[in-house]
Image (cartoon, rainbow, N blue to C red; front, side, top):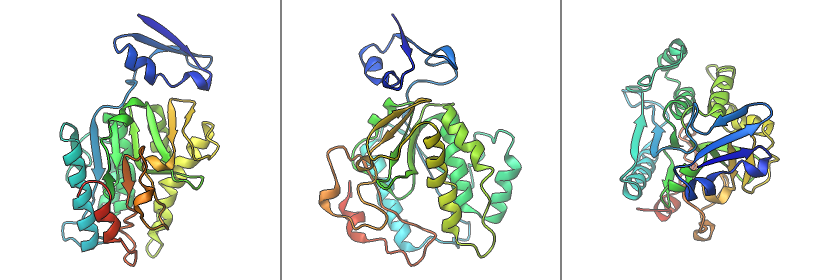
Length: 285
């Protein structure tokens, strides 16, 4: 069975079709790309790979405090408890180059020598997503439900509810062009210099980067589910960011559609209060 999907934005979400006819040959047609089979150079849906990045210096110096390790442990436990059938990986200094570097090994090794964990994390999440496909989550993301629904999209990220996207949670099919677009843009983001506020680079290479690029694909900043050009889906904030970075957790913020909660650990900011109340109260203990 063969389906040809033309390219008004309303036709881009082929998830229901794939669910109903999993063995069908699905073709995407538009003026710029011609006709391509879904699966040519990328699969249509994300595989059940779940990975996070954790770049801790061997001497355990750096920004992480005990409150962060406690948070990470609870988050990791929620993933393994809810998704024992997923391939769960932690990307670290030991394996960051396991999948190669696409010619950028020198850039990665320079960041390793600098112990620039933020830059390494931003690069690794995109490179591994591009190579393997799956779901990336930050270490301070706690699972509320299984992440299987994220596998229904070619690429998806969530609004933060304030006109920006956040890259703490992203899912993508292998070799997705929008992941590659982010990766190529990342190399041009100026690195912080000694004494700079690390939050500046973290924002520029993360939320600001993905927001700028997804706007080029037609996102209007609204906090609602949107299907965009290039196989990009934006989900509303309640899916993964049920409370904001400057908001307190309340039980009421967890909605039926909430599959995860970003706990806004801000591990590079020592004075940031990581409330034990919402760490313990969201998802699986």
